[in-house]
Image (cartoon, rainbow, N blue to C red; front, side):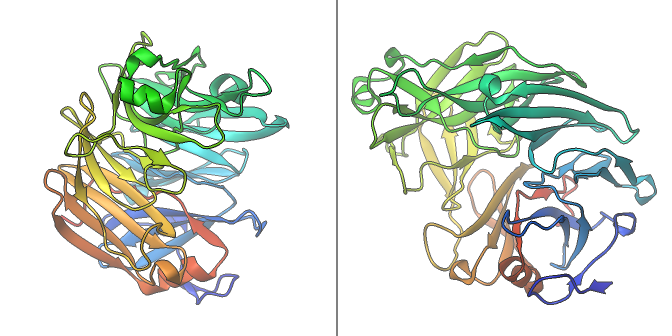
Length: 412
């Protein structure tokens, strides 16, 4: 079915939830409104192996996060939770009224999804995060934690059967302290039951760094900047991510990207500053490509973490013990760095999936999903998405969120 939707773009292929069949769907692309549009709408684009797609239109959900399990494709809007079944006869819509702003989501098991929603601000930058565990049988369990305690929307890690929220929080200890931010971690579920806290901060010490590094980050060092992603890897209760180490009392900041391995049970941590393949220290200044790191919960392979630079699309592997990294792949796109569009990565069965969705024609007029070899970075396959989708993305009032890739890998 082709339906004309509001906006300046051409009519779009559209289906209802109960018409969706997932057999040949490569990825689900969440679309949500720019805040200025004020339209009560969010969408999921189901992209098939031949590059065609169909839109499912629902009520609003800003920063929508779809999740695949072995049984379902899950996504919410402000009124309902949607479970599209791998077996289409299993598809369910569960009534669940809630806020229209989500931060992140993760599957606890095939039938339980934990989502963190923004419940709004109460006082300046202090507000509440709502933790909701939902299931297709209609059971909904909820809990709340304050951004003052647990930070804002960060990333989630499934450690065993428990979920932890890893974020950054900001506290002001004096008028001279511009932005004293710390990585913060806390439990948000025990099994399928929302369970909040305690939250602990990562208080790094100068002794964690070499003399050269201390000259950059100073004696008062913070680890901060944990962005929402597709889940952080957790192995043996140790969650792994890349934060930025910095002296936080300067107006001109130079940071050191740092691999953090953090035990969710004991609070013990180890740090490894990021280095290039020759062992030279990598630093980050605002405006360069070393400040936006994205991961996937499947991205820890042995002692190496696969990560995506969200500004350039560069994919790297870093040894989490030494910090030495090697580039795997760098996609081609018009316009050069920074890329005005959306990259989303997933790692599955020795392959890396990367989307390139340009937000305007300065970044190109074509959207792709590339698949790379996770060991050597060679391009295995490139799938072009129907140009009508790119036109829609660039001309309508929607923006794309983070893709969710089908774990059954229908491209192979």
